[in-house]
Image (cartoon, rainbow, N blue to C red; front, top):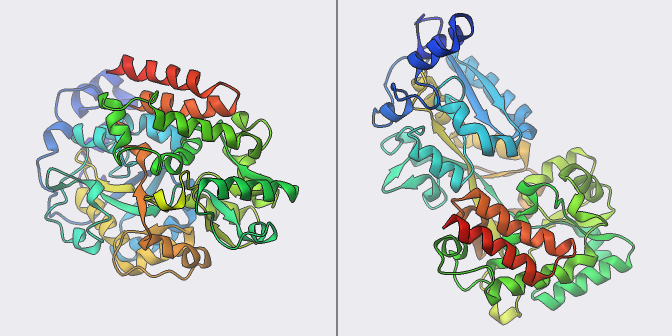
Length: 432
């Protein structure tokens, strides 16, 4: 229902809150902390088949994709008459506050979530509508949307396929004599030494940006850990970060210390991107989601992905890391759910998913999407390689995740691996 066609909707009531008093609004609108209805009660109600009309709030964290979505929004409005407004928050803010913001339906008729703790919390809070029987689910590669499913119910649709491992400047790697990605740990260290001999920083790492700094850990543990669900087991107490597999990982971070840029532990993401885009660093240790921003900074060189293989070649189980994320869903607290579903369906058409992908250099999970962007074409082989679903998103407790990831940052900052591991394990133990 739109504000125009239904004068007294939940959203209208939320807007009126500013003029008649917040206490009234909370009691009437089932906002955060309320027990008077809203998402918790609506979660089992199917999306109604009402008219597609009104204004849709689309909540996400991808500011770099705003222009691409604007073009799709214009086409959607021309087709349906529905307006979509992007409500964009920085990724760290979105991670910490999105649930509170979307729970009352004031924003986020269509919402997104990071895979892992945030998506699990939103499903538990009853924010995601059940999409299981919606035709739109059939538009997706079923294997790539498993992370949006719980107990047989399809709550959300992961839209992006991201490779959370270092992006490499292939021109610099070629100048360093590399003929391919290193196949073992000694080869990776040798590559770093050769790059350093060229006078460039081997690895730009934004260690002061937690959301990006933790991406490197995915590849560092993928072949070291004794199980693919290593961080699930860390949270359950079956594994510890003081175990040898994680100490080995931290010692390898220690070996990488001279190959990061100076003062890496104080580097935010923008300076790291600039270092890489300008050709002063050979690798950017974040992920494929930074290829488009680096292009926007003027990078002209060819790029691919290089994951550090931390074990001998014959012991490597995985070549790299991927993640299925940006989990689309329709908010149960929305007053315009038919229009919200229509927007999700629009995004899920192969031609529109292709347009989004090629404009943003992001692979998508929609079946039949095609890639013309040169960076997507170059990195497309990773879609079929032996990759592990990014393990850092296995954590349900974000404080525990921060403690484990900060252990790696501490080691690069000079703390011994043993001390860093013990301090992280202390946080894990307190959370259990």
